[in-house]
Length: 282
Image (cartoon, rainbow, N blue to C red; front, top):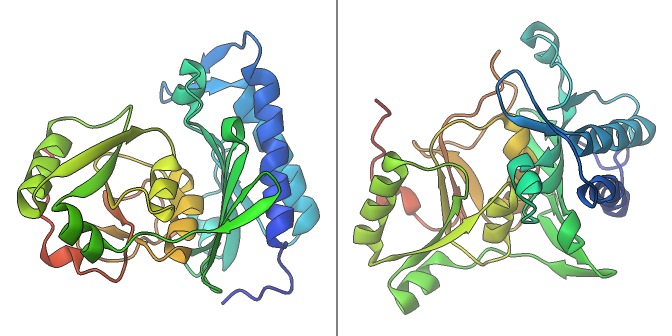
């Protein structure tokens, strides 16, 4: 496993995320241009500016650890599978939220070690907040206004007993009939579902803050979309699992797309015995 002696300190990673966030905000406040990637997803100069900040910063902090970024062509799996550990970054997650100017976009940096996300920072530039998670030490923190606040997911058993419901975060941009049917089944099982619509990796951070219980993600995501927030959530006592209950793993195949998954605020609760079976896509 990763040793901490050769890795950046939490503050160094937070500072880097904040620097990328400032580069994003400098463009956010202008009349920026929106381009289309090959997959028709939006791209702005802010994505590229944050990418440049993060790649340069990580090269300085850890010159021997490779970096995989959404904004660069990924090496072939034949190359990647030899990496025992690497940084994976999404310089601006939630470009649609950025374009819509709702503030729900993030800067994401994660360290993958042995196919697991073990270290992550998620910066929220508009809110001047940075979430930090170290899975190996079990340390999860929120950095804001010069202060560090511990993070912990809320206990599901207490929430369900007191409220006869669970709180689910859901995407502002993705969903559809399968998600609605799944949440209806969750509501039937738990006595109700309160919905929190939200963009980007903030959904997983909301679980780490103890503000929600479950985030079912149906449909495609890429590994860089969730790796940083995965580490934050796990360090805060939660988990990210596939629908068969297995932990999320990274860099195990040629594709960088994730399977559909569940993010859960309380890893100690036996969710899998109560959550409904997922209906496969048509």
